[in-house]
Image (cartoon, rainbow, N blue to C red; front, side, top):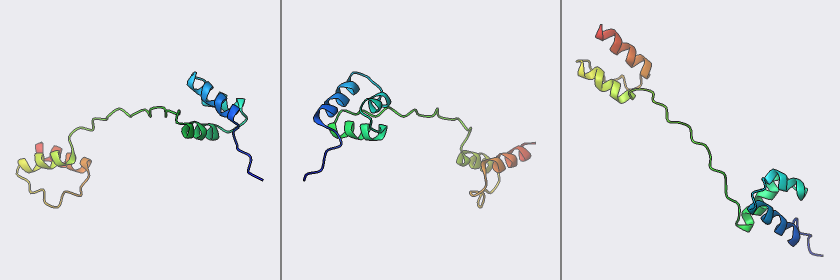
Length: 100
């Protein structure tokens, strides 16, 4: 005896139709009594699912990079060899100390 499919042809047509008409997947999953994940997977297999764009975080400006800080410190006459592992805050503190 062949296994019974999870989605009948009618269910598949309903899911695809509802999705292409803008019905949220959560609502579709309630209509067909399947999980959201199952409905999403079915839409992917049918080739109609379009993933929502992920929001991108705004680029933060953390000031100068560590490399730029080391160059600044080196330009004031200090040997920066060995300071590559120092934190940005530590390098900034050195610059502030020697600028006084």
